[in-house]
Length: 144
Image (cartoon, rainbow, N blue to C red; front, side, top):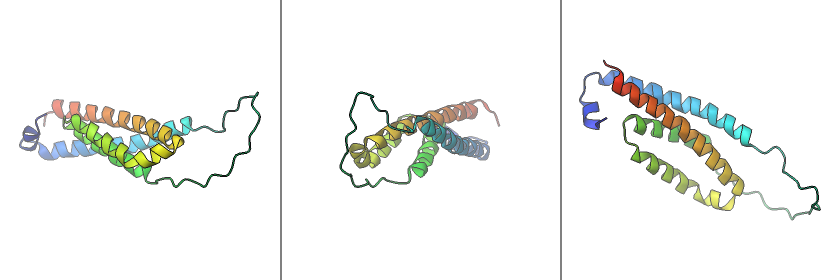
């Protein structure tokens, strides 16, 4: 959809309401689905090979983990859904690049965080892309 056609077409308030509905649905459903997938993927206890001897490791100071992942995920889904609904798919790459660069220091130093980041991001983006595509189709085919 051409952005200029979108802005200057009749039925703009209805289209904005439709966008808001899909964006909010993406944010809320994405939160629920991503949290469920991350819970499923969480390792309850470390796997241990029976023939290995347990080794006592030195205590490692706790790594400071960035908080705010849930808020970042909501913003990510909101933006991805919005740009997909408006037909600007190339902006999805920009959104994901910004998210990855923002988390790079933590991902580099903590393997567990990088695995969680990948699972969470892929789940979150899948929900946002689906919501954005369905919203895009709705914008194209619903007549006002």
